[in-house]
Length: 377
Image (cartoon, rainbow, N blue to C red; front, side, top):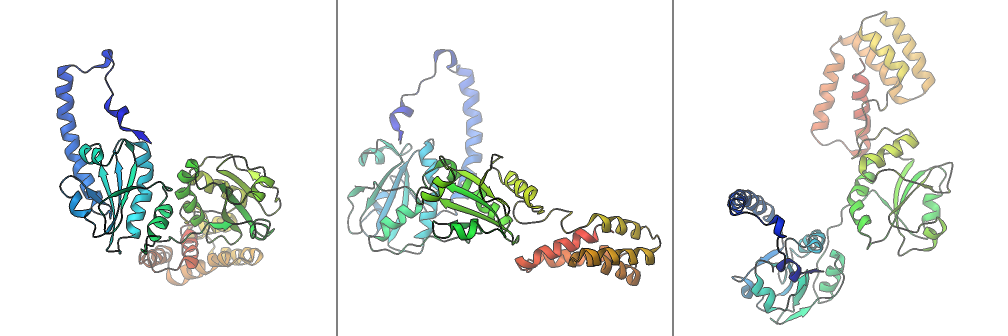
């Protein structure tokens, strides 16, 4: 918890104390920055369901008509900043419940309110039962789920919106079936819910899972190694997060030691599997293309012996036995029929369809690969 006394007792060291001129310049600069930031913050807070309390409205809101949860915070407090996303999520969960208020007080700015309720560190959480204006201390967990469970036990019905995830959740009962499947390449994060590094990685890992949702042979998974201890111990997990790779041909669990940003994770799986993904689920410019056919496409565009090139492309496509290999042949025939403008015209048509946003996820790859092939002509 951040202590208020630490902030109040700060003094400049003698050699760093600002001169009067420096203070004057700094004040002018800060005033300008303050105006800009105030406008920005004002726009951001419009989207929040957290009610901001101060001396002017506290007693009107906390009047016994509703259950009120209040966070006393300070803008400079690191713990408060860490808790902020969970508190916002909680406020959204109760935005439809008229007799529950999720509120906060900047107790560094409104110190009298903090003093009134005995606040000595940040964040301090108090709650006021419906029918009462007396504060009680909240001493539970600080996740959105912790707060939600606590309030719902009071007889309310808040609901956290669950975002669909492409990351497979592993347990002791399904680990063997999913991870040890020799038809799948599996990337696993062993994490703990309380681990700060795991929480920081979570949004990136979700996007990582989204990236490979159309790769049927690739599974991105995670396991709560604090809850399920047997399997993590078996694979030598001693810290969090631990990332391991279980390819089709080796289920011993290879340690992943690369970078933790999304691009690093995607690059690793691409390199191991031959996939051509970019972070978010798209495909690289060469995905679905074939070097031999790319060479023929370039020659075809330069109007060399097209009948001979078409025949050669048909032979190569048949040997590859791939639906997208045969697309080269289709494009060549369309160019002969409709002219050299066909690749550009067809690409523009596909772009219009994609821009419409109505292409289903399982069809999206097909559209992108067709564009990649058209661009080879």
